[in-house]
Length: 96
Image (cartoon, rainbow, N blue to C red; front, side, top):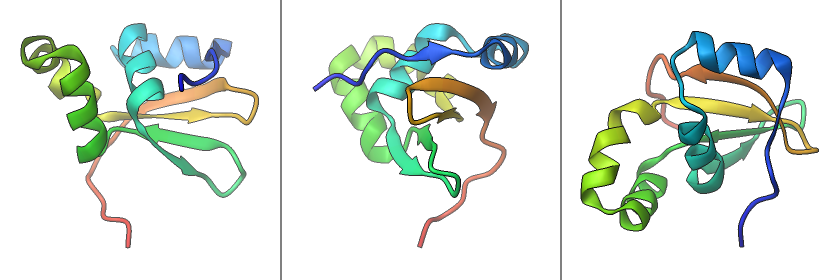
């Protein structure tokens, strides 16, 4: 089941452009990424191993390899499906 349409705040528009993240990559992470709740009730989306495998199967090996290294960022999305911000992951961390 596809996720609802993602709306962009002006802040999010500015941030993804400043950080060199393409809009289509944002949609890929939103559609296929791992979803986690943040402390304030918004959602964080990022690409874990399972998400990357699903996206690779959907896109095919060649298309996936072109964007694979570009997917190291996360999204913060409000409960009404509005993208609040987007940022690069600075380090890998393990959730326990």
